[in-house]
Amino acid sequence: MRIILLGTPGGGKGTQAKLICEHFDIPHISTGDIFRGKIKEGTPEGKEISEYTGKGQLVPDRLTIALVEERLKKDDCKKGFLLDGFPRDEKQAQALDVIMNNKHEQINFVFLIDVPKEIIIDRILGRRVCPKCGESYHVKYNPPKESGSCDVCGTSLIHRADDQEDIILDRLAIYNRSTEPILKFYEEKGILHKIKGDGRIPEIFAQISGVLSKTQ
Ligand SMILES: [Zn+2]
Image (tube, rainbow, N blue to C red):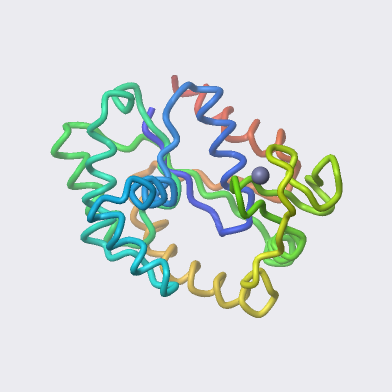
């Protein structure tokens, strides 16, 4: 099964991505991970990526699309995959269509995890991340065992500077503007599934796996 997972930043998309990939044994392909991997390897692409991300800019489509295509060619994607963070807008969705057509494959499911704005703000304001290993926590919903330090590596957790209410609202508005055309694109193909994302983690996962299991 080939899946795209869409959802507002802070809406619990990452958690659901992990659950789906574990349960259905498919690779989790996130553009964030691909970028971090390239930066770590120190390749020319990695250097280019860090120039953009260092300035807080988006990595250009040309590069993003090429890297996603390269990743989807790997053997582990033969049984399916879950895309997270891609496509980001309509242009990328169309590019993905071309990639899939060239492979004689198609995307089977697109999930939108739909979460009310107030809940997203609450989740992001309480978010704490580990600057060393990237693990994330929430002061209320997913606190670390020892307050303020990472369960995995013990590093002191931080509250990211851009996790503030006005910045979150801006990010949401930008996200919605670029996502609307993608939703329409996949709705017309009949593969879009809207999932209510304001419940508990297992309930949200049950909605998604219900759709996936029915059609297997
Ligand atoms: Zn850590």
